Image (tube, rainbow, N blue to C red; front, side, top):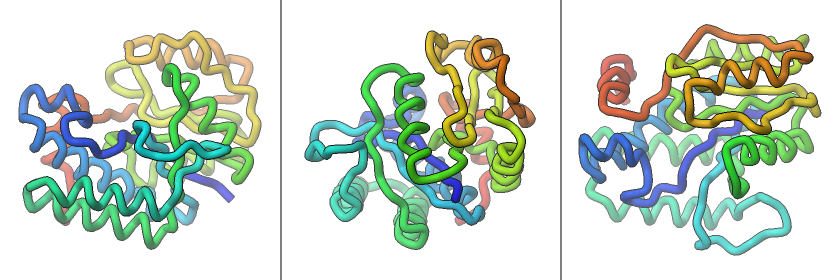
Length: 233
């Protein structure tokens, strides 16, 4: 069995899409966060694999012996956080669809590790490999990645150890690896235009498959680009 792990933030007002919020405000940015996550989850839901939600969360959750979070607790708190905000109609519809995907796909929730992105990804891969053969990790705003890209990435892992989708800004929008592949995510300049190059250099001994370049949503021009391609809810 394979899994798609979606990395995202816990939906706290004022703490999601903060760079975008500088241009459109906190409430609109929160609504954007919901619409972007809905788009990513909707594409993932087309693939017959498990979906895990990997959250950057605060101390509202009790510590567990592993990185898993209580499903019912997550759903309840997620619902209450979003319902208390007066988001626009598109965001409300996105939230409704996200809730349905959580339920229909029986998504499990996990806590992201402390540390830099490399440490977070390493923990998620190692955890995922205890349950699944192949693991893809994608950001909750990587809206250029559709279901066909996800299928291509999983197919590639049948005879490659690692798969990447580079981003236009030099980063990545997706990373995947087959079970226990010796991937190296250390000493990467995360958040810079060197990420994709460094990942290829540090993992040059592995068989790496790279899909065509994609993009994610960080700033106003990215958001406007997404609005032109999104499917109506």
